Image (cartoon, rainbow, N blue to C red; front, side):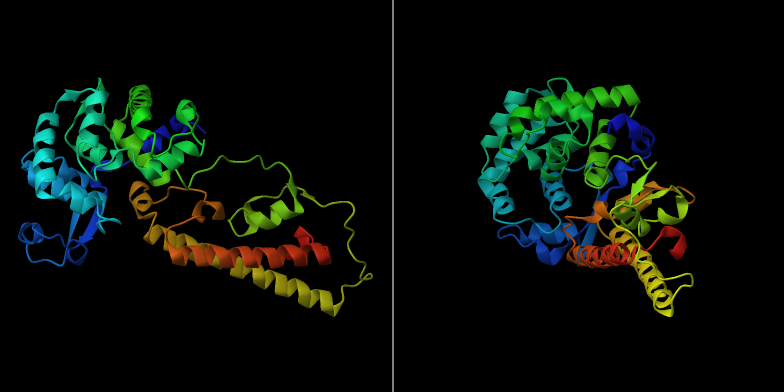
Length: 343
């Protein structure tokens, strides 16, 4: 796949609206409790979006706290946030970021400043530079975090072939090349670099190339039923010649009739299960996607797009879907069920 194939979608990305809810109970930091109370203003939670962080009126300390909250709503694991906000480190970071705002710095300076503060990594620093409108050796800074690194390494998008093998440990080395690719792409399809970055973050893990569908194997046809493709395709079903249907005589037996009814019931359950899985995803991990599309837009989903989720409930549904699919495939093969029998 290529990024430019999705340029219409990227242009529609409402990146300034990307928001996260932050709960006060997750943000407890010694020596900063009163300051954090001031941010929450007695509320149990707040919502921050990118537009809030682009605000030039924020003083640098408030900007740091709010950017960390937006980037790590649950405050993350370990002590990195606490280390960054330790008084000496915080003072040092404020001084560094004051020089970054609407300015150009070198990639070497970025590396040195990251290494100067305990707990600060590229993912966090690129959030700061992004919202401060910093340029790195002539390229607008955009966020590079673990999720986007995973997307690049998947090899799904050809434009990033030159930096596959990227890891969080070597990300500083390749960050400048990443910015050049993003910058060149943004110019070629006339979008903001921020929109490409948000596209990678939001859709990078859930998109995959479309496969040719002129012919299907029996297993392929069974795989596609729950994804909404079965009723839209009438291609010839290809069955392994070695698997011959058991002869039941000139008239269908009562047993086979009941078997086909059971199979149709499983088909219905499978479609409903896929719909339930999709609805859970759209209410959770894919909630940003729902904001992009308008009523009447059509998007084709596959069960593969929901695998390896961070949502435990979604993983359970996908696991159940796989079990059901396995049972149906086995029944179909054993009994030689044909497509025209279950339509």
